[in-house]
Image (cartoon, chains in turn purple, brown):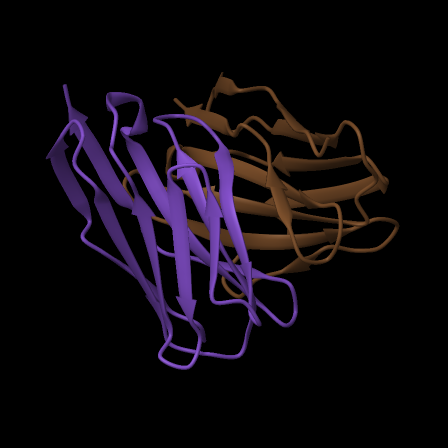
Length: 111
Length: 114
C-alpha cells in the first residue's frame, strides 16, 4: 500500500522567504505526482502535475521536482506572500489511477 | 475548463436521516469520479471509485450500504450518507477525471450530523 509522508507538518515564515515543502512516497511505481493547495474548509486546487517520466515542473513562483527512484518530491515557492498561506497536499497517482495523499503541510506566511 | 461542482457546500442533518451530495463535472464528461473523506487536520482518504453506468468500487473498510454512490450520467455522481450518525460528520470531496491522469476536485461538502 502506498504511503505518502509530508514534512514538515507546519511551517511559518516571514513574507519574502522561499518555501521548501517535502513529500516522500514508499512505492516508486507511480503514474504521476500532483501538488494541491487547500484553503480552510475548501476543496483542492491543483498547482502542479509531474508525470512519472519528468523531473520537474514550473509555474510562476512554483517549482516542483520529482525523484521517482528515491520516492521524493519537493515543492519550492519563491518569494512567499501572505496569500500563499494554505495547506499544501502532495498526492501520487498509481497505475490504477487512484490518488494517495499526504497529510499536508500547513504554511503561514507572516506579513 | 475542467470545473467540478459539488453541492451542497455544507449541510447539517439530524441523526438517523439521509443526506445526498452531488458532484458534477460542468464542462467535461467524466467516466470516473472519486469520493474522498477528510477528517480535521488529516489527509484525504479515498472512499470509493464511481464509474458511469456501473456499480461503485469501495475501498476496504467503507460500508457500501451506508455510503450509497450513484453515477447515472457522465457528468453527475451522487453520494448518499444513509442513516447518518455524528461519527459520519466530516468533509467529503469528490473528484472527476477528464483524462485518466489528472483529477479535478469539487469544493467539498462539510457534513455535520447532530
